[in-house]
Length: 64
Image (cartoon, rainbow, N blue to C red; front, side, top):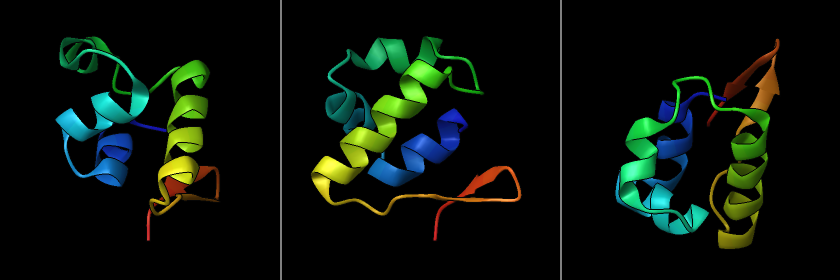
């Protein structure tokens, strides 16, 4: 999952950071391709908050 896809799920960098329980400055420091640790946290937070969850299609995450 990319950082842009994760931010899209939550609507903004600020909302992404809040959902993940991290400081906003960490979002800027994350690599474009999120490590599995963060991808898993994104999915968990998206489910917990009732956000649209991306679907794995052809090896790439897609948000509908």
